[in-house]
Amino acid sequence: MDQRDLLIKNGKILCMDGDVRADWLLTQGGKIARLGVGKCDPEYISGTVQIIDAGGRTVLPGFIDNHFQVVRIGLECGYVDLSHVRNYDEIGQIIRREAASRSVVTAYRLDSSRLEEKALPDRKVLDHYCADKPVLIFSLDYHTIILNTVGILYNKIPFTLPGIHMDANGIPTGVFTNQAENRLEGNVLDAYSYDDFDTAAARTVDIAFSHGLTTVAAMECRGAKAEQSPLHTSEFLVRYKDRYPLTIEIFYQTTEYKRALQHGLKHIGGALYIDGTMGGRTAALSFDYADEPHRKGWIYMTQDALTHFTMECCQNNLQIGFDAIGDAAIETVLQALEAAAKHYDVRSMRHRIEHAELITPSQMQRAARLGVILCMQPAYEGLWGYPGGMYQQRLGDRYGTTNQFRRIIDSGITICGGSDPPITNPNPFQGIHYAVNHPVAANSVTLQEALEMYTSLGAYALFLEKKKGSLREGKDADIVILDRDITQMDLRQLKDVQVDMTIKDGRVVFDRNV
Image (cartoon, rainbow, N blue to C red):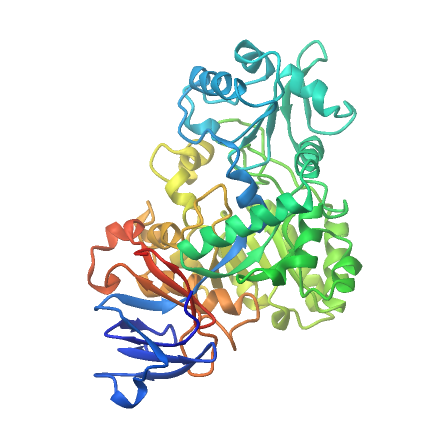
């Protein structure tokens, strides 16, 4: 597309630099050159400048997704989407239909809390619909995989691995979690070549630009056994991320900190699992699950191991992303950081807790003192936070304590936003909508605060605030133009907002009207 300098005029420009607003801006050489209020001076208009009339629509800095997967999103475009199914028979009919044209059926986004049976199917259910081809289904939270019998034989998972669910006769049920799920996930990704990854990443870049994303934090490898070597999706991005026009900040998925240092990376973890998920009742809580008494989830790393890892990273100035959901898991992270703070300046390292759905008020105060950033996913509330949804099923009387954005911000903590695809759509306005329209009104934030999660604070969470996250002279010309003036709309409709144009480094990379 056109690579000339740009003049955007007649815009409602929200600079995300305090309360600074403008009516026009000029880019030169991929940077913001000038911002102005009122009518644009004719001296800036010449034949070498591409003029874009925003027509009163909102203009913002390019969005930043702080919990993203570059390769995985593109690969999953070929998976079978089960997010809309309501029961086992609907699952089975879809699997049967897809098996007619596939040698292996790989499906994803299956949410047990939305099924009439309120539980994931097992291999016997899947065998009833497809008994002659391998079937593999990822749960919505990606912490559980379900296989049919042929799928179990096809994947050759050692039955000694933790996380293989057995029936009363000692036979695998087809449900795999923990290390067994991690091994299976590795098998799926290992079946792809680097050429496949390249095609997938290019597809993801197009998707990102269509949603106004210009910078992402890539957390490619997921797995319960964090000390394993990173999957080759991470290795692929380390080698080739610069071939894509999207800014990609890699969080390296391993506890082997030296590997991150060898690659010259600044971030580690991100999907470094401290606990599981609330959907699977594996998020580590200090209290029992309301719908399964005497179960509190579990923590994947001992306190000593986590503290030792944290010390090593602090010594080498690596920013850590801890993946912790339950309050008990968050507690282990805070204790590790408090131990490190006795020896290192942890505030300057901007360590992060990813998700932090159940952080308590007292933990908020401690996190604020440590300078911890919370990378949160407001769109989770759209999936699970409604009355009667999964959060209420799991928490009972504690419903309303998830994702308390208002209280967290008031505690002095920085929140950055991420989508964690494919769990939620990588459209920032899905997250912005539920941050402003939280199902529990007391947890909602203002539109300005929600936008900051995906712009200025998103840049701060990646040490990029000097270059990105706001529209200021000298910063990168990463810009989005929306389809309306969002300051004058009904905020209950935020999830319907679309991006009309995305500009990356001063170049138009997406135009919805072309």
